[in-house]
Amino acid sequence: MRTAPQHEEGERGGDGTEAGKALRRPNLPHAEEARSAVSKHAVGFGHAHLSLTRRQALATLGAATLVGLSRLARADAPAVLGSAIGPDGAFHAAALDGELSERAGAGLALRVHALTPRPDGREAVAVGRRPQDVAFVLDGAGETLRASFDATEGRRFSGHGDYSRDGVTFMTAEIDFETGEGVVVLRDVAGGYQPRAEFASAGVGPHELIGAGGLVAVANGAKEPKSEPGVAALGRTTARSNVALLHAGTGAAESVAALEDGMETLSLRHLVATPGGGVIVGAQDTAKGARDLPLVARVEGERLRFLEVDYGLAARFGGYVGQLSLDASGRYLAASGPVGGVVGVFDLETDECLGLVPAPDCCAVAADGTTGGFVAATGLGEALRIAAHESGVAITARRASRLRWDNHLASRANFV
Image 1: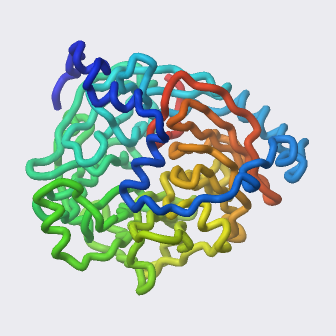
Image 2: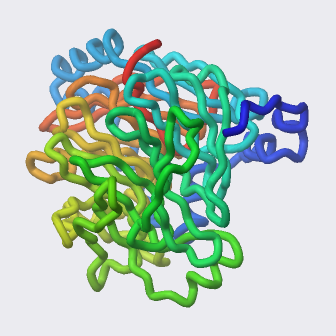
């Protein structure tokens, strides 16, 4: 593990740096990245669908219920961590509190993808944006950069990692640079996040991995790596995306759920575990043209059971789910759609989509600690509070941000 590097002036977003270029882009950063990853033909939707006012939404849901949830969230919600580009043009770890007040934390030498808090809340890891070979260790508030560590030789990080329940092990999903094959690397936290063991991810191009009911769930996206020579190697395969459930100790596959015929253009990317040990996955469609395939599925053994939504709702996601988050009750599931500029919420008691709220260039969403409550943050510099109820979903608070938020948010376990 490397000690934290000192930032040089050139790393702080001056002219020509990656951070500076990202800050100056006038378009929608997440939507543009998403479109480049899938196609430039995402289905849009009319302004009529975006014109629902907060007053109308609250009336639909029941104003008293949602306002009550909003007040509870502001008072009691834990902070969420993420990453963002600051006003200085540099990359930062960042946080939002229960009032949607922001804080730019530790400066980072490069763009990261997801921050993962340790279960005790005293530390967090920010994994470099794929394809990247470095991850950063931060204090639990994301304010201090403590150290960094590298991907294993010949591999690149996927942008995600996860701690074991006891916080002793940090797991990284890594992609073989030559072949695209995935590897789960188990790292010793007390030993400076050095590799202790590894096993195959049971697929190509893993993206997110999480602990789930004593197993490790891996979304093997089958569309990576994104750089040579792996792209050429991947182009010669017929790999389909899958979700593998693996034994944490041995790597043995409990089950592998692959996409069926007719769904093979989907890349399975992001995961969430349900309180009962189940797994739900979000997908991104790599095909050009209409975006009408369902994008959220339950993993049921060797099968993926997609949550059906009508054509209109499915199309509004633009063929792309950016992050999944489960609320404190385990009933409501938020799914961000940065291409479509929406956040949708599903009721897992009925497996129905309750509705969408407009959130241009929003990829990052996390539970706020309340029933049906979520916080979202956008690449345009806005923080939102979203409340869901069995009768619908609405934005209940919003606040302008000086930070341009990146792909993911994570709920912190504790304030320290």
